[in-house]
Length: 418
Image (cartoon, rainbow, N blue to C red; front, side, top):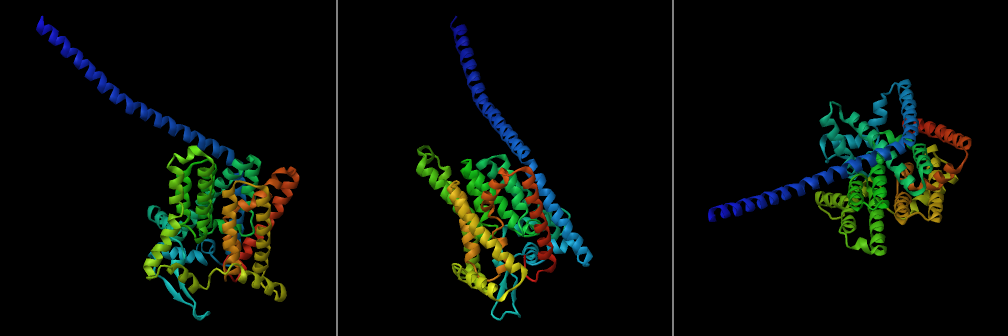
């Protein structure tokens, strides 16, 4: 009897141990099922967002494909290779050089005494992606640059739509993408330049701020800081958005995510400048590299003097277009502020505008510096969304003619970089 009782006790203990182990196994299983369910919901949300954006993406693809075809035909008629025109001219040559050989190219100008062109002026993310694509796919560096630019342009258009939809609804999102794709300098979006990359990162970072996805916002801002010098505008928007959330929402203060976003957002920009400083042996070495190129920041004095000279003495078509774009950007910024969107949207546009207005030299490149500032188009997108369909179609058609024609001029005729 004693042995039988002991056996029953051992049996019960074994069952308890078995149930305990089963429970331990069941917890991770339930957690795994929850993770899969969450992933499935995220995929479904992404599909829904993409489906809503399809009209905007279709319009964008149509206008930009038309722009590329027109430039390609003009290039062939002038016995130039379309791939060279779009993928290996002006700044694209420098990006391709960094992608192929890394940093280290320095050219002393013969036309401008004292000017030194150093490839450290070009931020590393675009050539890094270019190199990665040419390593994985059987394509050359130039083709890889075009592929990166095209993919980034599509992602940028999607992100621009999501920001517009989040703020004002579907029609404004579609109008915002269409206007961004019909800018006078829109041909740059499908060249081997880094503007589309920065716009994609900025748009999705701003969308993450609007939807309180702080880690995404900070991480994308850090990448934007590795894409272009004016990528710091994205970090500024994220820091402001997170700071406002921390000040106004008590629950947010208990989460580490907005604090991490503030810390992460400027890391890419600051990190690259620090690396350049170490490479050249001076803490502010990057700004010295820029000065050797002939560029600096003078709070708009150069821009004002150049504009006065242009009005009095005349100049190239690209210069007059730049003046028109700068005035339009200033007006759009005022209208944007009056419309009172979320502050990060305004901060992002303001920083880009200040950097475009306040720089020196390379005057015809100012519209390209404003290319990522798609939030400046929000007032126009609101007006276009409210217009009648026929009115909107006529306006879009007129903008398309201007954009396609000016794209031909920039790539085929202009003596300065687009």
